[in-house]
Image 1: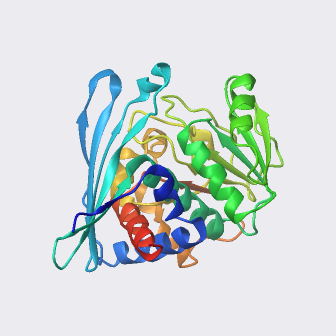
Image 2: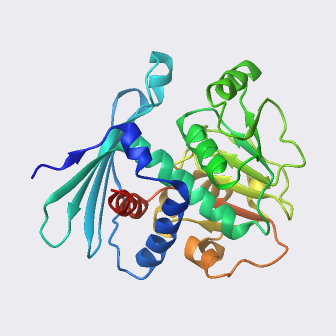
Length: 300
């Protein structure tokens, strides 16, 4: 039988955040133990700074291939930055099972990784979070925070307060306290999540205990959202150690000692030092897309 092809809305319905976070937790352990094979993504250039990303992953139960295009110039065209699909196959037979909407999978599994980092590296559930950026990934993170932390205050930061206000208006009705912001982050924010494609740091405050920094948007070595002042002095964790060495521009440009950078599984295993500032860098990995595919199949 041909595989079911899910729309963006149908894909989102198959990826509820509580279940998705648990699937990412399990996949992180599988990936670290070698039970998921996920090679470094292949990146092909497209015009105007765009890239085509090919990301396969395989386990004993299923295999997936995410093929997505990231086109930063699409914002000026009024088009989404990300297009693509995630194909899901039965591993023993190779038979196709599902085709998921690629941008929806990317947004939700990326947000789930951030939520897992918050759940693991922050000592108490957050009440006040700052999001830097107002794009698709920010919308995914608002949905995740609304699902897992109802009523939480979310400051939406943009260079333009009008842009931040328009974003908040478009995300209304999710049961969270959304506030448009520009300028410095409120000192009371317990988590700062950077979700831009900036080539220069947009946050460089000195690290401090009680505030978790989560870097999401920068996925090339020439990109950086957190400056050296924020990086150095923080305990550093990454979702994918192999990919981070080539793609985590924040850490690469800060010249970090990679022997001191720990993995998401290290965090899950309780290896974070108490009372220390923490920075979590997410570069993405096809293992997280495989986790999303498992979740989608389980919700079917």
